[in-house]
Image (cartoon, rainbow, N blue to C red; front, side):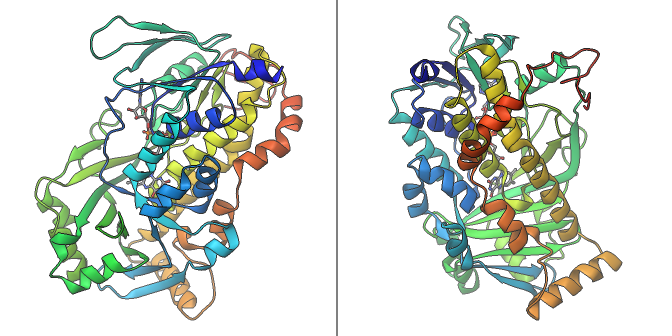
Length: 461
Ligand SMILES: Cc1cc2nc3c(=O)[nH]c(=O)nc-3n(C[C@H](O)[C@H](O)[C@H](O)COP(=O)(O)OP(=O)(O)OC[C@H]3O[C@@H](n4cnc5c(N)ncnc54)[C@H](O)[C@@H]3O)c2cc1C
């Protein structure tokens, strides 16, 4: 029986963090036929840093790729939250305890390093086949056997792909999500967060004559400068050769194009203007960015979905739970998805479409409430960090002051020990191992929607 489960054919759409980690997790469980279709010609190179939280590291370690990623990453000892306009320190939080408590330290690294070592891990697995330059153009059926069409960008004949299971790891703009929701009569719109982000990398040689900035680059600190409606978070990556900055500010450039555009070349002058009232140190830092290298990202989320699964298709990562970056958990959550999917599918009692559907719904049950709670916490943290002048800001600053005196919660929830406990202690593989049978056995066959109702027992959408 188990051998037949491992023979199930699995197609993955998208080779982002969710797709790569799903492929690797499934191969490590022994699945033998995993095809990954990716629109881009290769992994792409996003010049940006990424936080490698312990809950992500735990999964990556089990997949055998954490060690090389950690070797190139920075081990973060503490975080400093500062007033953007004055550089005054509002709070200083020691993160040294993280490794002791959660087995992995809090690290930050280069996004390419994470993607690349996941890819290298996949390449060692003969079960995984990559099809770059080959977008999935349409979906004809969600099951019992999903049917999709891949259209190679070199103009060769479109391919009909008919796996047993399809995982849509196709990111925030997921077309499969759109088609699934259409079929289920679910109206889950893109929510405009009114926020955008610049992602900036400053290289060591650019600041070699600036001791103050060199000290930041050589440090082990995540620094956040906050101001009304804006903040900057910064940390060293790439063996401390690069100081990585990620900002958040009101969106003024994308608002008119709600669904279409997610990134654009920004103007350096505009960026300097956005942070014009921040302190001279921040101003100087932003000034090092070469003209033409300012990239702005629109930050969007979706309304929570009533389901991530239909028949033999499941949504994964940003396709079903895109988040604001204020908890630095988007990729970590996609990687948790991957671990839960692999742990669920390997426990299928048989290969019937009914069992496949239930197995995918176990994944959803393990992951959904947690992922959406984190999406909400990230949004709430952003609201607190971006407070303008007024009573709420005074209250927040009192909390920062209490923290400085040694007590209380951290208003920047990313650095709060209680929030970290929720984030970092979760082990999706173990959770699935423990709860699979109970959840699987409790599931009725999937209700096909009638008049917009999914799983009609409670009819909630
Ligand atoms: C400013 C910012 C900072 C962030 N910082 C952090 C952080 O510090 N830590 C963290 O954990 N997360 C962070 N994130 C979030 C993280 O980047 C995302 O949540 C994560 O990359 C999502 O991975 P994914 O695989 O779901 O989607 P994606 O990475 O978007 O991958 C989707 C892939 O699917 C491909 N694709 C799409 N459609 C098709 C198709 N039809 N056919 C074939 N291929 C297709 C795309 O080309 C792409 O490669 C941040 C995000 C932002 C915007």
